[in-house]
Amino acid sequence: GAGVSQSPRYKVAKRGQDVALRCDPISGHVSLFWYQQALGQGPEFLTYFQNEAQLDKSGLPSDRFFAERPEGSVSTLKIQRTQQEDSAVYLCASSLKGLQPQHFGDGTRLSIL
Amino acid sequence: DQQVKQNSPSLSVQEGRISILNCDYTNSMFDYFLWYKKYPAEGPTFLISISSIKDKNEDGRFTVFLNKSAKHLSLHIVPSQPGDSAVYFCAASDVGGGSEKLVFGKGMKLTVNP
Image 1: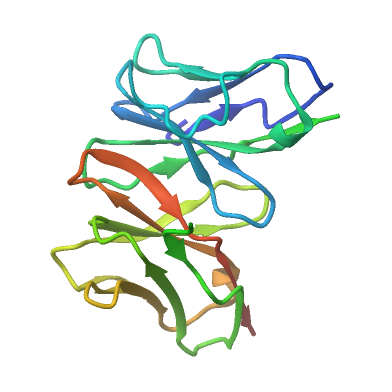
Image 2 (image 1 turned 30 degrees about the vertical axis):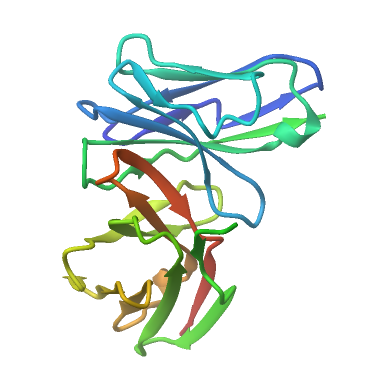
């Protein structure tokens, strides 16, 4: 497709399990971003890649969160030993470099029981 | 410390009238501003953007105004249509400072009544 694709759309996991969320950016987009959105809030920045380089991971809440983009295209956000406070919608966005808008996927809704 | 603020949680307007959505920011280093529209269970959809070298940008029914001295921007939708009913987010970034990450406001729910 032409847009940003995220999978799965919904994920339910038990506390303590590891989860992996996938993002397929728009073809040719250099920059890829992960955001976390809690209910009733705006998206909050987690981490950012330019091609395969992770340029900013200042928004990752703890060392349980890890993101990669090994070939500069598809990205995976991994959360280890999930906790209830990790429940949120995780949004991925991609863009061309510079003063260009970010285009978002529909997100993965993560629920930790 | 919220750097981007949308102080009104909701707005209701009549179809055909103007909708004005406001946004304030505190970080004077922000140089790129965007508005997104979001429907339930979907990701934010890009609407319109403006860089800090401009004070106005127009795209069809949507116009964004930027007042740098007041650290304020607004989105005007004219005429408003029922399909415009959604949550609108204001976002900003410091691209010139080497950071493309977006800082979002909390959003504002717009309802356009037929």
